[in-house]
Length: 493
Image (tube, rainbow, N blue to C red):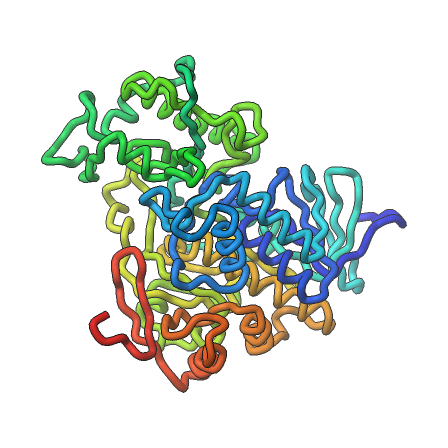
C-alpha cells in the first residue's frame, strides 16, 4: 500500500472501539503509547453502549482495573451502587448514552485519539519497515507499530491473515436490543415488515401463550409481562429490551455471510425486535411504551449494531477452555492470568431451529476463572493483538468469556502488552506475561478471581502474585450466577 508523506505514526492503532478495544486504547495510552482508535460509529464501549446491552453480566465482586473505574463512574453518576440495581437481570444497569459519555471521558483524559465515523479500508506492511500501514475511509493514512483488533467480529484479524480457531461449532443467536421508554401518550407503531405474533406469544404470561405447567413450549418459565419489562429496567426509568424467551433473539450464521448478506440479515433482526415492540404494544396492551427517541442517535432509535455473542475467534498462543476453568491447576494457564470472570457458560441458541441439541449449554456450570495473556496474541501474525470476542477461547467457553467485564479485562491486558512492546521494540509474543501482569497489578486489576482481598487492600498484590506463582491455590465453586474462588474459604459462606 502506498503511503502519502502526510501519514501519521502511532505506537498503537486500535481498529474498532468495541468493549475490549476501548479498554485496550485507554490502557495503551496510559502506558505511554501514542494511541489512535478508529471507530465506525460515534460511541466507544461496544457491547455496553453501541449495542445497547447496558446491563453488566457478572464480576460484581471482582471490580478491578478499567471495569472497576467504569462501574464506579456509573455509581457516582446515578447516586451509588444501590441505584444501579434497577432491574433484576443485573446489579449494574445504566443508560447506554451515559456509558458512552463515561468511556469517552476516560479515553480523553487518558490521551487517546479517536477517529469516529471512520473505518479501516486497507491494511498492509512494507517489508522491513516493522510498521502496519492503514488506509482509512476518511482518506487519511496512518502507521502503527502495534495493531489491535477491537472490532466486534474479528474482521481485522481475519483480513491480515490471523489463523482461525476452527472448532466447527454453531454460532450463537444475536439480538438487536432496543431501549424503550414510557411516553405520556399512546405511541402505537405500524406493523413491521414480516410481523408474526407466533414469534412472541410465548414470551410471557398472556392470553395468547401456551402455558404448560407454568412454562412455554421450550420449557422456559413464563414470567408476567411486568416482570419481563422490569428485567432490564434502567436507573432512569428506560427499559432495555433484550429478552431471550420468545423475544428478540435472532438466529443467523452471520460469520459466514458477505457484508451485503450481513446487512440484510441485520435488517431482518431489526424487524424481529420491532415486531416484539409491536406485540408489547398491541397484544400486551402497553400502548404508551415505545422505542426511546433520545438514547441512540440513529434514524430508527435502535442501537448502532446488534449484540453479537460470537466472533471469528483466532488461534492464539494460549487457548482458554471450559476444562481449564473447571480444573485450573491441571493446566499452567493460571500462571499467565490477566483477566477474571465469574459468569456461568451462557449460550443463546433458542432462536436456532436446532436448539434442542444445544439447549444444555444455556447454563454451563463452572467456578470463577482466569483467562491467560496468550489468548490475545495470534500464533500466525506478529505485532497484532485481539481485544474483544475474537480472542482464543474454545466455542463452549466463549459463553463465559464473551461477557463485558471479561472483555474489558482482556482489552486492558492487550493495551498493556501493546504499550510495553511498542516502547521496548519487541514483538508482543516476546514480552513475558510477568511484565504485563505487573502493570495490571499496578492498575488495580485482578489476575486471579480470589475473593479474599480487593484491589487497594493490604496484601492484595502479594496474594495475586503468590497465586500466579502457584504458591497458594484457590478453591473454586459454582454458586448460581455468581461463581466463586477463595484461598481461604470463609466459615458459614
